[in-house]
Image (cartoon, rainbow, N blue to C red; front, side):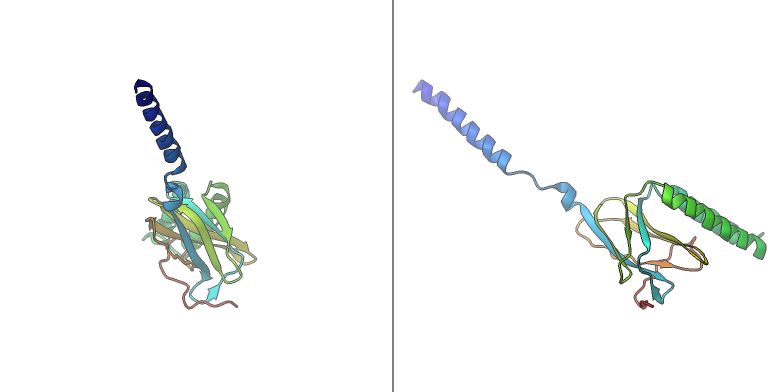
Length: 180
């Protein structure tokens, strides 16, 4: 009987160990990730195709946000005149153009042929900045949109709208925009 009392607990322990190893805990990274989708448009009217869209953590985007704040302060300063406003706008475009490509980012995608973008697996519990910036013949175009703190289980849809005041985060949407 003494030998059985030693073997039975050992067998029971082995069975429980194998069962515990087979039943793995859910992957919390997958459960806590969020898909961010949206569209890129120019103003309220035109969806933009094949435009780069970047996703930065709030910390990664600090230099971009600082440039936005400085440009806004310079443009809306009581001492600004038309010449200073134009200079501030060009300085902002140049600075952001240099920053966006050089700063580390979480992800980069291009908008599809319908002007849509998707970041499929973004960690929740943090705040991000979505940025689009591209160069065309008539200049640099930039826009940014804050996500707020992402919550697990939610699927934020955030449009990024390029406006004439790119130093301001536009909260509008592309709902009326169409392809041209």
